[in-house]
Amino acid sequence: MTSDEEDVAAILGGDADRFERIVGRYKGPLMQLAMRFTGDRSTAEEMAHVAFVSCYRALGTWQRKSAFSTWLFSIALNVYRSHLRRAQPSIPLDEELPSQTSLEETISEQQEAAIVRRAVAFLPAKYRDPLVTFYFLDADLAETAAILRLPESTVKTRLRRGRHLLAQRLERQLTRGKR
Image 1 (cartoon, rainbow, N blue to C red):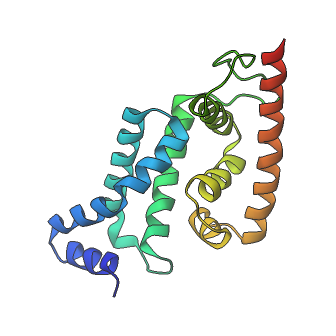
Image 2 (cartoon, helix red, strand yellow):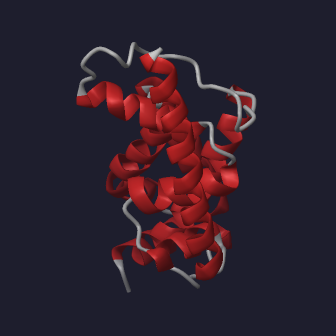
């Protein structure tokens, strides 16, 4: 039995304090994932907190078909998607992204990361979620498919299409910045 399984069994048995162990193990990864969605630390903290609350409330529904971490990241992605739907309206793919900085100037790595993160955030969810999970969460194809509850072939297709859409957005951003 893994430590996650032991902790879940203890929590379901009435030892609610054991949830702190789960939070301790996964706070960093959930925050990192949330930061990839938002780029804002306080929003990421709020989103991670909501994900943990959702996880706690749903502990009894974990069926152990996949690793606890996979189940937890699925919950977190759903929370993060919901937050993004409420926080920002969808932008059509042919519409330009808001300018964050003059791309003619030297762009620091941090600024480049912010531009990429923002471009990813504006992708349709069906492409954004596989990209975030695979690249930012550093999950392999099988884990990404399990977290998103999709067949691996669908994840491959969406990753390929998502990379293409992301490249288009970034190219438009670079072209617009050179004018």
